[in-house]
Image (cartoon, rainbow, N blue to C red; front, side, top):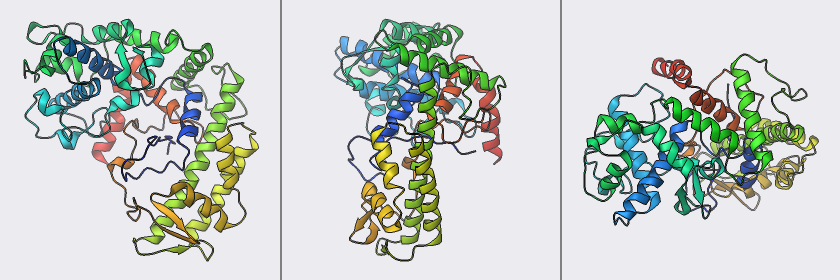
Length: 429
């Protein structure tokens, strides 16, 4: 089964990474937020823990005289956590650890080394927590950027619950890591730190209870509607896990108590299907172009895969429009995608892309990020949870529902039991 992830591009393009947003990043984010408010890219609890811990360590290190920023410290703490997990041994297919290739063979674990660009990945897991941390009350936010966050009392309690009993060299964990940041110790390859930091370890019971409370209650300023939607979605994924039958869009599950929540889930799924159909058309066209020197006349005879993709796209776009959902940009996009002339429809898509493919006159041409359909690791969402056929969700549903299913398993202490078949299958695939 394939899942629609709703991958978001950056607000500003500063490289030629192959991310096609079709100028729909805000609409994608909005539909995901309507599905499960305040979740961001989180799918397991230690993502939240490591980001919160990074803030706390940065604050403590600053008090000791460090000038390292919060982002640098949090990224370094995450990199150290992943290094420790790799050293401890990983199952094939493990997705809770990033940078397995980059971190392999690294031996210098001083903060100066670990915090250098290139030591760890360019898109750490921390980036997927920026919306979730303030929404769930783990931080106080003076702005929308991670550097504007400070650890809250609930964040402190969560850190304490995860790290209880982990005292490297007899020190309190945050103090030891602050000393590491300040260059006062390089002793971070320890069993105590592995038990505290490794992303592959289950959360202790008290930490799982605190995370459940945060998911239910959210931050003090969160709206009652957002809190209800997240609570209902969590109840629904748990009901599906217990064997509740799959649902049709015309028959909402009992756990979803707000009709407009279900309507948003449905419309969002149809939007994601249409968006993915548009991406498939562009990918087929890119493969047809194949080289930077070749161009395709969009008003001429089109290759069969492109023609078939356009037919699928029109059908999907029309299905979204029939919902009457008021999302303005989604309606504009889907209206463009029902254009009767192939050249007009392709022109709209090329204008929305402009980076991998672009339109010059009446031709489709390579853009600055063109590589002839070749993908690389950066094309994939860094927050993609492992695929799973159970439970099965309605086609196109927001990736946050799937991620919430995994997070619910983590909160219930059952993630490893569900991950093992997937990772073992990957090992034998």
